[in-house]
Length: 511
Ligand code: NAD
Image 1: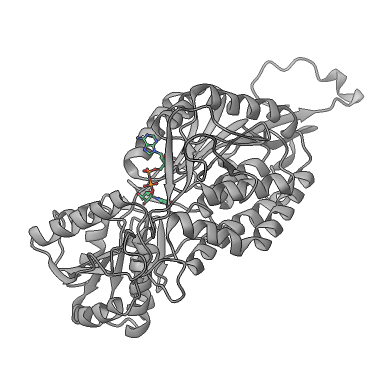
Image 2: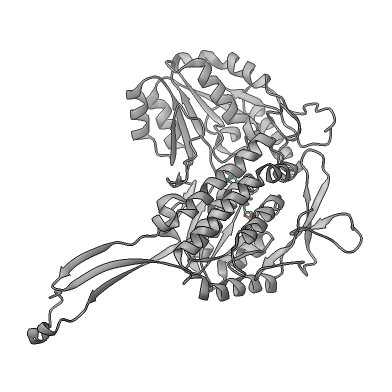
């Protein structure tokens, strides 16, 4: 057991509790409201997580506000070196972090390592803050006058994260916020907070000072308190469109800067000239990996023209995937996060049948020896899918691929641009001209060309169009420096003795 997880008193002695982090101390919450953190492959209760009280949220924000007074003036090299150490600690503990992640989230161990690794890349980016948080300077904008900009931290910032990437997404947030000189209050997903807490412990070990990083747990009440708190200057949210829209509106109304990265329905367009084998492999991995619980999952396939004939081979690929607990070697598809998620996915599959889609592969109720209580849904494929069906209109967030057809590329582009979501998309083709046309015309944030899950590396920013994103600036990359700083523009003159005769200037012009 690690230091951040302590044994609970009372009736359920064996179940550890997840602490808060306030002012550098890992604290047991005084809350009377707790929920279980459950292993989705076994239903074992791994820990209990509190819904923090209003005064605990207040204490976390107060600790962050206090720490900001000194942290904002900490030299940039000192901040950078903490993240240099932090990236090494994450690297050293990567296997252990993946085990914790798989136990509470369900994804396979190699994919859990990928979850940590994609977050680690952002920590490496934060360690380069000395090259990122740079203002501009113009010399002699008027006689003896220079203008320059300072990118100053905002103050206390907060982050609210979803269950599906409990390592990567917290690491999208607090490292860049803290590296730019802010202090932070993190609200992890209450469904799988354990790996997030382990990463927080490592951040403290790396030297993040007391109060600079704080953690509160909870659901809607805690999130609303963060949205409303006058001392919080910016909020980064990743999660579903409904909740993200609420957070955006509520926190914006309270005067905060807000970025919300939200839900998706990602289409992969397959042109008949695409490299068939590689394309089918890419589609299968991108639809069913992580049991489809990725905001960038290629859940909707649009087969164009002759590529419509490829459905049987796609089904064969999907059938070959092994459904099992994420801890087991050779597993391709682990369980979904909760019993409720499984029921929701199964209900959507039933709706697809009822609404006339053709069920090519039914993954419901797979038999998983040794893990009979797990929340498993096997790879499922529907063809003949059209807008207006729930399986097309809603984000399923499970291992369900829906296949639609189009006569040509323009028809496929029109279909995608008419969908409310604009998170990710991909085109598979050997034609540069077709790919370029797709890239130009498509209204989606992340575009892959023969790349099924085009999540950008940290020198670029994650983005999104339409219902998938609110706020102008994305996490990480160059945009996040702007998000987490206030630009101050300084215009300065140092008088020379020989300018005393210049007299009074009553005009707006700089002279
Ligand atoms: P969610 O919206 O249910 O939860 C996200 C966070 O909001 C959690 O911390 C949760 O505690 C909090 N929350 C839940 N209900 C709330 C409410 N009523 N009021 C205030 N806060 C509330 O999302 P999830 O199920 O954890 O994650 C899956 C969703 O996240 C999917 O829609 C997925 O597409 C999206 N996602 C998007 C991205 C992206 O970058 N665009 C990345 C990952 C996940």
